[in-house]
Image: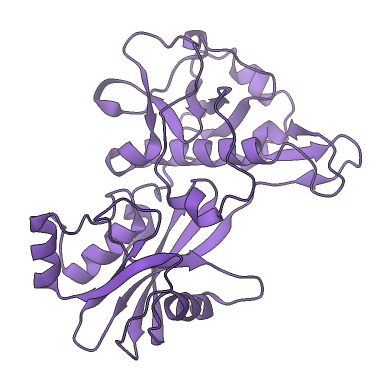
Length: 325
């Protein structure tokens, strides 16, 4: 089984300090403490330093604008030091109204960091978390993934879903409260199943999504619908996208995917049929691969495998029996 904490972006690596979130003065006090470390985040990117490692700055090093509601409590270190994130304002347009959720989840970032002139200390740069997730330590991954997920939630939920009024940030960035009706709202996490479908000949089923660049292939995936079990979601998504029927489904691991708010829940699924008919909407192509066929296709450049930071890559490599070269 894939061990969740061994997956990129899945590593805990930090005490989330939930009990400190309700202390109204915690963040202000932490910003006066030289042991506090600050991570800068904006639209799926974080500030990195030498070797593309996440830059954890002292409060005195933070030179970018800091709105009062931009601070997020990420957790505490082993010595009790606080880890904060600062949401740096972005002037790029928000996602289009009506943009499909799966496009937002899987689409590559168009830029790294905010469209702002805010200066960074020398040697630092904005880097998309997708690009470095596979190379981060457990500590860095835990902080950066939480920061990116919370930043995306705040950016997309500035108003109350009950009455439409503005909301204010509370509990150190972990809730938003409606200024009119007082209702509390919490960060969303959308469960999505992702599955390595194998047949009786131990081939794997991979697909090419309509919005992916040419050559990109990956495991099948889809969001869990209301009132649906995870196992049913696996069978439904595979059948809808490829026409393949699935029997046994077994859990393999999970991974937070904060682009913008998914939890990817990984499975191995056994196919009951092998005829493939793609839906033409989400998938434009799908096919079965043996291990030799996949290796040959990657060597020739016909197939670009899933990125190293994704659970899709881990699912394929588990079936493959080792790292994909």
